[in-house]
Length: 191
Image (cartoon, rainbow, N blue to C red; front, side):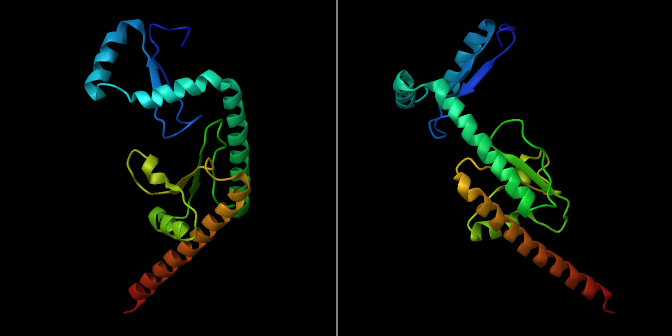
């Protein structure tokens, strides 16, 4: 950004590091785009909520922001490590790439019998949840089976249990799907 201020738009938010519901962010455009950006912002919503901005301003006057961000990074890194361990243990046939940062783990399976929505329904019934992977695909297809897991709002000690419940939901749905497939195959084979 500092190397190319005439070309780079700097975008930031406190939503992920302080308060997701606060919805306060910023945009620093290159100087030549400043007026156009201000006009677009004004036509989009006239003015951002001042209460949230005032609260944030007062908080930043007293909060050690850099210390807060450093602590948050440590906590989230520990939770992601715990989540990866739990997925490896409870879902050994599933795969994922270790994230280089961030709050989520994208987990996939080659099991073509699994349906993301049915698994999600079972997971919710068992007290856990995930984001279906198809929500993050351009074509909205649900194959291969995928899910985005986020441990951000889960206490570190509860992550293993949450993944165990997720594995149970996947197992139950997998058995149901394979049973339905076997019934269809038997009906097709009957003259």
